[in-house]
Image 1 (cartoon, rainbow, N blue to C red):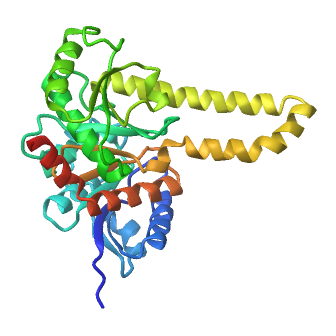
Image 2: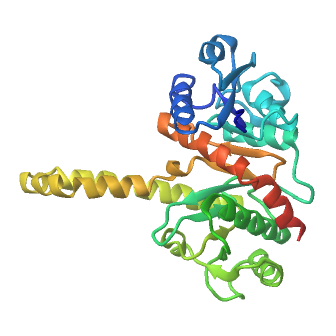
Image 3: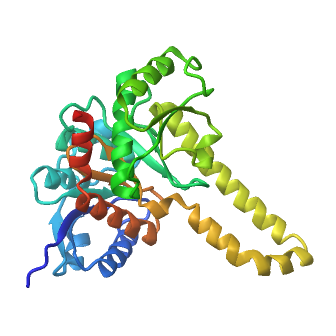
Length: 328
């Protein structure tokens, strides 16, 4: 009996520690998912030794570095692993693409090669915040520094589609990030967006404030890419500092070290639960194919999580769900 396998593309050269960490993460992902088939894209010397019955090497002779100008690199390096990977999705050979490479290059390649879903003005990058009450989808977190109100409406619909497919939320609640809860608060853009979202976005509950992001007050929080990126980086930085300070405090004296031996399992569990990499990277929503971008510093488990998330998005028809959401 032939398996109905899910086919995705993985960039062998994506990330600060590629290709070794990608190979390790790929092995973990394939071992955990018997119905996964991978097209591994990269230089022949890297991808050919990793070939198997579920890993097909695809040769790409160029690599886009983290420091290169994204759009220029995508246009100039048409045989790079990122561009070739997106082309495989465009041509229908795979349903999704995962890379821990340059975020800008992945975004540019996906937009230029895969194209946008009809009706989408601008794709947006989403991030899952491991908030207290529930995971929260925050978007945009960097793709669009300047937006218009109708774009925020589309972000809300795309974020809700992602929450339904990837987080299993049947009827997502949606909030607009602002400096106050009242509809009259915030910039002219925020006030206009509030009016449009209240009139046309199912599940919209109104404005939410910065403190509501880590609290998990709603399932989806919408904002522009500048504000969203700053919010995300503040949360990541704060979590890192808090855990470092906690470690320092628990190892500073003998009594503290004795106490640490008792609470260490609970702290490790908490750190794992709050790790954003557990959700597998940041999806670029609005392009005509699944594209998930991992953190450049991803380790093997984060790579495996990103590959698994890409497969889950393909199986859940994330692209079709977004297309239907924005056409309603």
